[in-house]
Amino acid sequence: MRWLQRLLGGGRVQLDPGRQQALLRDLQHGYGPHARVPFPAQVEAATGMLSGDDGLVVAARILHQVADEAHTDLRAQAQDIHRRTGRRLLVHRKNYRPLWTEAGPGLRWPLFGLPCGFHPYAQVAAAVAVVGSGAARLERVTDPNPLVTHLFEVLDLTTAGWEYGRVRVDTDAAALADRLITSAAQILAAMDDPPRLPPPVRALMRRNNTVDVHDPAGPRAVGRINLGARMREQLLA
Image (cartoon, one colour):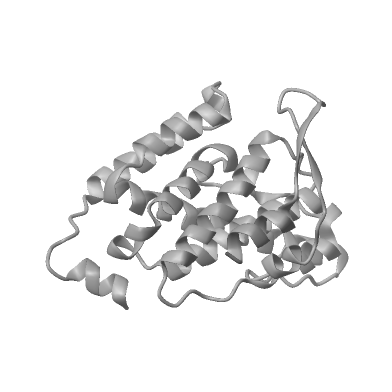
């Protein structure tokens, strides 16, 4: 694997695990709804913290952890539904849409309450921006293949939450979706052998639905977003 060869060869990458742990702690405790600062300002500040190779590693770790914990949460919800109703639900990480299509009203969107405490519109959005802007450097510090897989998982969960999970589409939600699409495109473009686009992305790219985007502080619609068009524009370039 080229990323591992680069990491091990020539001493070109010097990482500091202690700094990475400190960054993770600061991000967990300093950002989120409790910070009482608008999410765009939090994203800007957290992105600034994640500079250099250690910041890039931390951003990748955040996305891995969020994707893993979201999957664990959905499996637990599916098991609980089976215990209560006898209905079996399949939880496939490559495509969550069938799960949401079948059981959407009975599911809780997992990204607002993960054990790690990372909020989708704060730390996660910052991590997504960092891995996208650092796409050309990713192979120096980590394997980009599982990273882009987890990025697409979070995108799948985000869009399914809008459609099935009663997640309100406000400017913070739209900004996260746009960052996920843009960063995924940046990482794929930097890879020698990029993977195929996953089924939920291909399904959304065949659609042309436009969704109202609301003010986070009120009911007023302040814009619109067409996810299918945005994905075609970025991921088929």
